[in-house]
Length: 350
Image 1 (cartoon, rainbow, N blue to C red):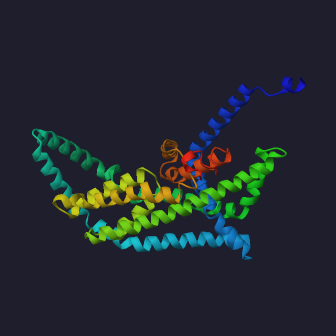
Image 2: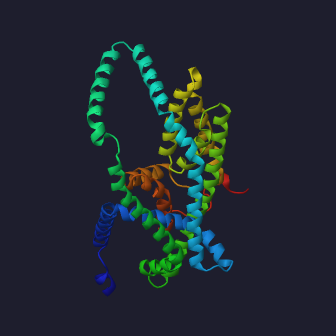
Image 3: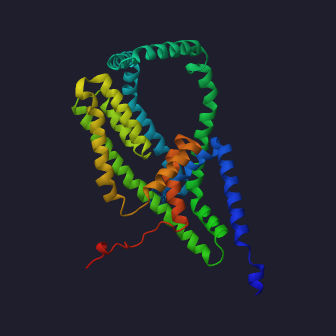
């Protein structure tokens, strides 16, 4: 009877948990410039954790392993930028022709629709005047804007690098500390096991997804090269990278390829780049990814969509990157997602 009398009120516990969660979200939003790159560092650290463990088993010191992974990531990004730079320069040089093609397209469509010409002309005149008035003020980023943003970007890069280094250096201690604080007594080993299981699951997931996205990028780049689209290598790399951001990434790339088709082709070939990408993306999403990833991780697509929208709204592009890993880790820690046998009778052996 004494235990029931002194037991905490469930309503009070839930209220305190809700208030704590709201305070935490507010703090994460207010200090976005610090916590967003720090969260990205944790996610990247979780993804590279198995590689770090393997290198440590070879006898390398943990600090050397953490520093080596950071240097490897830096050189990978630098190599990617070096590969893409000529194509980006080509696109910048072709901006006048792109504007001309878009203007010609808008003129053709305006001529097809009765009455739209006058309305479009008035809108264009209004927008043109507004742009002309504001181009020197805030319409175009200036050197002053770049100098103002440079310290913020540099600080975020430093937070990311420092967070990644120290997370890789001390992640096992962090897991033990959090397991001890969350669990109590016999629950501590269980929580520690869940942290390790979440780490392995996220790492396996991203390893499989990286292989799938790399294959998609190669297929898209090769197909676009066959039809003669300029910058096919860049489009392939973009297809690989944007496919990490579910739903929104493929939609953005499809729109970009439609624009590229309008600029570079005529007639039905205008839609060929977008159609090729959508066909390859649908094949990857319906057949390749479920066969490689679905057997390890199965999540409700609606939950993924909601998580993606929330983190994009919360932290912008960085939120879109960390949305899926954070969701996977949270589900695994609360034992909502786990490796369980299928309950489908048709899936059981006879």
